[in-house]
Length: 289
Length: 257
Ligand SMILES: Nc1ncnc2c1ncn2[C@@H]1O[C@H](COP(=O)(O)OP(=O)(O)O)[C@@H](O)[C@H]1O
Ligand SMILES: [Mg+2]
Image (cartoon, rainbow over all chains, first blue to last red):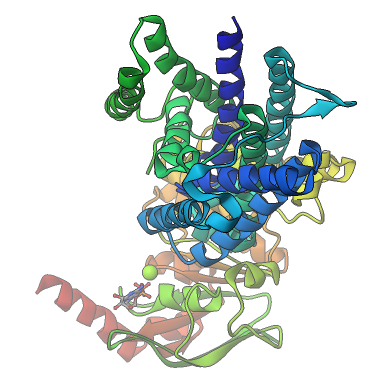
């Protein structure tokens, strides 16, 4: 049972990641492939503040999210001049840079050794040691993320984002500041990814760069595409399915040495099948361009 | 008074002079037709005025303010609206959303308004929705308000684009071939709508290939060829202009070869 709850906690964290990427990718149409970089920054900032300065994870989460937001700004501004595949590659490049920093800035991040012993969240001095309580915490953040991103997209502001996705030129001709909206949307997406990273760090209590590889970013991307671009429900379903599905392998009794690579193969296969038979994803209305 | 001044504007594409030291003024409250053979530089002029293309030299001045280096959205907000030759509706947005995006908001479009669901935003949204539905009724397509942009016929798309440019409440409207590819009955309707814009005190510059339309509604005709004005006058004057006739015959000859 505990294990099942653990899976749900992880799924919840991915829901936050997928929905925040969907805001950038599905609603605004910007092919940002390095979403893992934002959660990486959120996780490391939050973990380091707790380990080095004894800062409570609650504040760490806020600082982590803020740091990710700043990174979102730093990624967005130079990327404004890029479109399509070039934008995708540049954002991937940023993710590689962030990953390398986590791996090679040994003085701060301890590199591949990672950061063990990250304290968990606590309420009134009681640590949320039970996985049930942690699930409640993550569920709260999932709800908050969904609530806020839903408000963003269901508004005149969100309509501009969708206009940008459909046709930047016309959106500008209608008097909307396309660049400004792109930067803001990157920052919002990064903010929530930062929260997810922080939640992850304080839950697992150990992080190392291997949790934030390109494969990680691709997984989040796959969740969005699988669930459907421009659908928050789709991202919810996509994240849950893609987290839970590989775990079923374990119940089949496969050892983890086989289950882990199999997981990636399942993702790959899923992607191929999806592109062939349902390119708009489960609940999406339109295709990846 | 001149609302728009084109001053010695040149624009070169890899040696092709799309606009060649072009100058003219637009008077307020007039309908001006911009005609000329394909490749004459008409659309390029629209792109330059609306900030989508930088000029190589020369300036565009709108209501005494130079538009040089201004971003398209700023130029749009100053009161210049445009349509596109190849009708660019937002395919996956509804007709209503297509028009709502053309409306100006005071604070309702801000991120903070979205997050807080401010009363101001909801009010602005309601007002704009009402106005938008009126515009849809004017073009006879209010029953299509929930259809997606890519679910309309060509003629309907033209009408929605017309309604959208009107929704911008701009002072100067640049229409790029507003009647291209639509049925005769619809051409008549569009002509009426353009005349109606003038009655509302708007200034219209429209690109048109159908000379009948030009003769019927334009107060003034500017003929462009190779990026230069080759004739400028009333529809009557233009009709009998030697150079204009040659430019068009020249085009026809080129097309055959
Ligand atoms: N973006 C561009 N890149 C290169 N050449 C262009 C571009 N836009 C227009 N041109 C060229 O400039 C000339 C004028 O084109 P355009 O303004 O579209 O003509 P019109 O609208 O009068 O038919 C043509 O020779 C066209 O090929
Ligand atoms: Mg043209």
